[in-house]
Image (cartoon, rainbow, N blue to C red; front, side):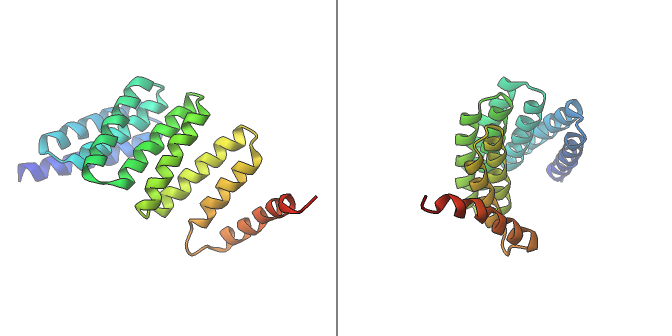
Length: 185
């Protein structure tokens, strides 16, 4: 009963932390995630611990606390790996890739994000795979690597099943530059 109360409190703290994160209240989010982490540790809930460490890594990245963010993400990744949770590992690598991107290490970010994409694909997490592909596309756009950006964006659209009208239109539009480039000169 006490353990259930601790898990309920941890879940509430997690949700509050996520809300604070979305509002850009990073200090408050950090505090909520740390408190939730302590409760998950006390209850022995490894998945909860990994999620909180992953969330801490994301919020610490926003605060540019790089070393602490990397440590939290590393611990989260190790726990997710021990649990065999490929989607969790992918989320952690996605956050690590985002951290590298914030630090200006675009190539390291893309390589890390590609690892996350592979894990999401294996875990059948199409929505997370698509979001990560879009991030790689944005990074390539920022580098003026237009074709790669279009390629990754096209791949992200292909993840949406069944594709809606928006996805079908965007994919048709993306075929135009690919077709023009593949024509013999």
